[in-house]
Image 1 (cartoon, each protein chain N blue to C red):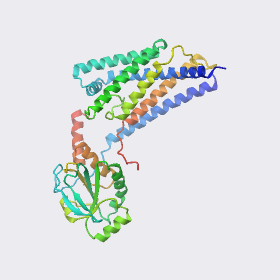
Image 2 (cartoon, chains in turn brown, orange):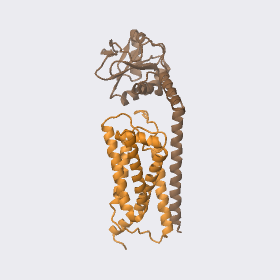
Image 3 (tube, one colour):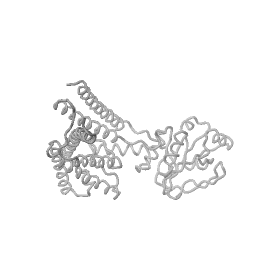
Image 4 (cartoon, rainbow over the protein chains, first blue to last red):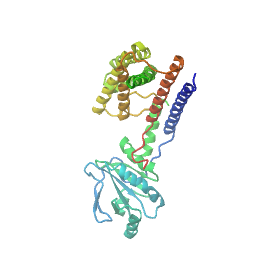
Length: 204
Length: 192
């Protein structure tokens, strides 16, 4: 048998081993996905209940435009992200918010919200390059959703109903709100409860 | 020296055998999968065709029989063309039922076409893969009969061993792609 054929055989065997290793790795990732509890936004006690219609509220944004928060808005969903210029976690979350703004723009509008001194917020918006987002300053808005800790996000669906809310410290938390809306569960707690019930019924 | 077109056909003949064996292995594994995980296969048949329990069982049995027949035919050089055309027909039918299911928007349907426990709902990937398999089977079925592989001074057992290993490697890569594509998808924008 020539060297060429021997090397061919060895190469094919190498490719088979590589394929098997790849299968093992992919399955391991799948097992990890199953075992690790999803990172979801922690939902806190709030005045509005999930699934309830959110009455529209018109607010003036920092750039002078009028923004409607809540209510039906032509079939588009709305994410209200409560943050503050002096909150370091909010600042760390901004790249994820910018990414979500681009990736989810087909169905979602993002509104940034806060309260306090207008000047400080205007500087924050300019320094962090947030001019593409509507930015509203309203204490009333924060009270309406029972915002106690930051950064906090509220997702209103296309029908103007409260779809998901929670503390969002990371990209995973932020995305968990979108997934919660798509799957029809309101919070991470509800999702875990449903999953436990499903697993119990399957006898896992 | 051989003319160019004749040389090309001899290369095609070299590639045809491992490709046919790969399809045969794949059909064999798919048939075994249907036998071992019968309940999932039945759910998939019901989801894709809309048939109720016993007609779905009948359709599953028929699909299993055709898969095994095509696999055996693909392994036998004299019946390779028939086996390849049968396989192409079977995958074309699978593809048609996938397209029909997607167009009827029956929600998230498991097409039963992944080997592992984890699976993604029916989508573009499964349809592209099925179309590629049907095209490959059709291409093998359309090869002119009597092609002779020109393998120089390589002995027949060595050539057969290389071709068999090539078919196994293709199956391993197929299964690896299947395992990777069964993982939960990341949201768009997550890698930005």
